[in-house]
Length: 119
Image (tube, rainbow, N blue to C red; front, side, top):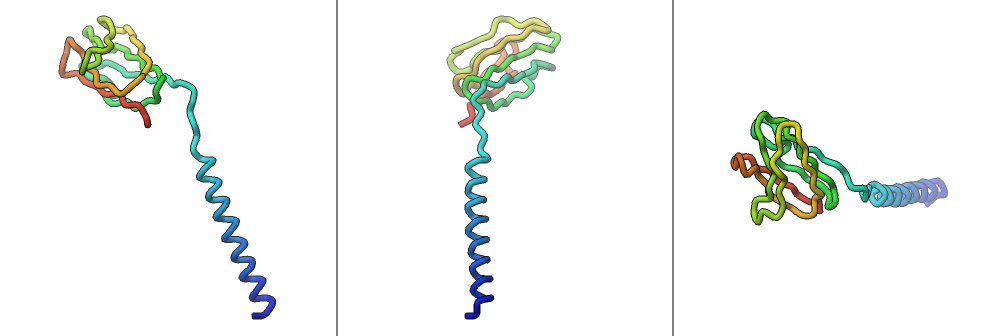
């Protein structure tokens, strides 16, 4: 092989090696870690929880706001582990998410929602 061919092959190998390591470093650096608890809003309106499915981090705060014309509550469905008090129009209730939960309104049992903790 002549000197020019060897130089070109060396250059190609060098470029390939450096682009692979840059790519690998980028993958490691691009995964942000969120450690500050976030705040989320679930609106109660027209006999619905909006959104009715929410995915949060453990320790995040979820605030339920009753913007409906009738009273509501928010109650964990399976074991009634937690429940808000009666929420009149315009009132709010907050909770800290600790685990996955299905919830509903005990006054209007068709109203249901889900909280999922991000893994």
